[in-house]
Image (cartoon, rainbow, N blue to C red; front, side, top):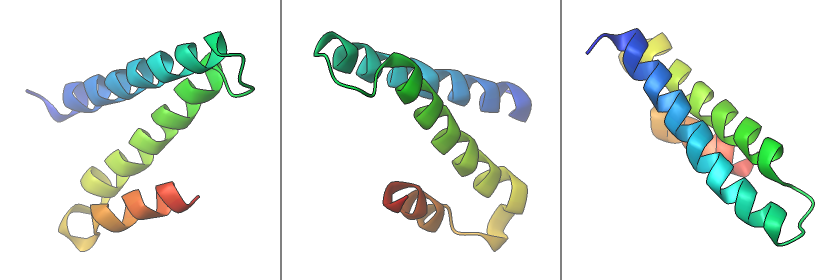
Length: 71
């Protein structure tokens, strides 16, 4: 599978999972809803993909994931 296709599929999967969480929160009447969770999950996935494919073995993807969680 080409790398670009794999990246696009990962981003779409992150957006879909964020949409599921956002839909549930929107139904519960919470402030952060569908669009917010789609954007946050897609952004976090994009940062992780840049870390993995952009810097190769020179970076630590686990540190990037920890940074995303911390905010």
